[in-house]
Image 1 (spheres, rainbow, N blue to C red):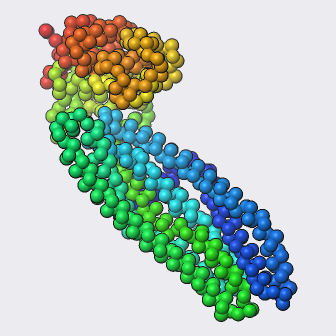
Image 2 (tube, rainbow, N blue to C red; image 1 turned 180 degrees about the vertical axis):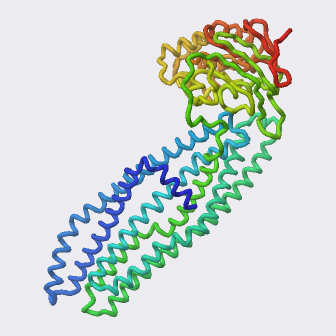
Image 3 (spheres, rainbow, N blue to C red; image 1 turned 45 degrees about the vertical axis):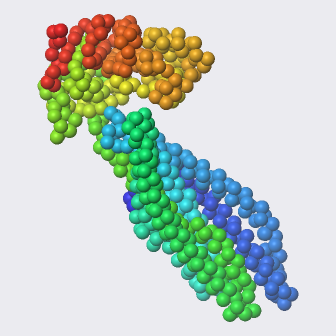
Length: 554
């Protein structure tokens, strides 16, 4: 648990200025509250002492003078405290989400695989949000509480050391209490995090494939599973809430013990110790406010630790193809050569390629044919370093791609995937995935080359038209052409078009394939297909058979 939390703090180092400022402002705010009640206590003590003590009367005058600015300062500091601590938290959590997404992108280049979308969504949202407890509900209150307890001990120690011990001892116990409660709370928090992930997966999975769920009359089973996971989550949350409640009750009891100790001292000390006793009572009240959040800090730390563990569990998965430690210089050419490539997705799975040889000269147009399962899409994954061959070599412009960073390789090779997705954003934003700095004129050129420009111009919002989830705003043929425009917008000299007309009817497929010849002129093209329609114009036709590429004879 501790290692995970310290790792989170290391990831937050870039926001250390905001985080430290939030703690400083909180400590000042808490000490202002102590000072306010300390001077109020001195004023009351002076009133109780009456005219018999000129010294007490003088102290009362001084206290009255200080009370006025402190009454104004206290709400201002509380406002600044909320502002600074929440700003620090929002910035740190935003950085954490970006970091986690980047790690996932490196480790899941070919998709989610066996990971569930709902579970990953829960880690990205709920588990990251749980980390705010580490700062807002643990570190910040702890810093303020330590400052308050030390200040009270020093103030009372100057009046009477034994009084300081009597009051500060239960307050110190309230500080230590979260550490004692954290281990048990951590186990409960981890169970809660797992239950949250299961519930999200049970909810998202059937909604993602809602048509299939409804077609199979599976909604009742899906609802039953959601209800089951909801009950499990509710039980885990109740267990965590009970532990937090016990912690809150124990912490409140300890602060009340400090207050009772101060009252007892005042009653036993009589008139000589009246001033110190009254001061101690007011300071104990100040401590109760500052320490009020500490008992629940144990549960907050536990929840943060559980969230961090789930984040790092996913983020620390091995990269399928890590970048080389000492990369080669980017090649000047872009001819692709594969020699004796052997590849399998797992040791216990059959070979996809067994001695594959393939040449794609600059400007070539290769049609690669074969039924499903022969490795056509796997070839694209190897060329883009989403996976690495177990044997053999792949070179780009004469340079082994294993020695090139993935970013350099993907600048040279663009891939229109078989299920190319349009995201729920504008057409312009979807296109700029391939070229973030492209201006509108470049977007229109790409759309025109994909023969979809006139359709987009006819839309009321043009390039700002929302595509909808998975491109629901458009027909299948229109969505594929927009996806093709995105691939064409990339300056990459090599294009891999993986079943570019997948899901289209025969007439739309032929029209789409006729577009490709003109649209991809001047680039090397690897056209991955089940079959030829007759309108393609490849310079070479190959067929994948038995893990090898052979020249198609008809």
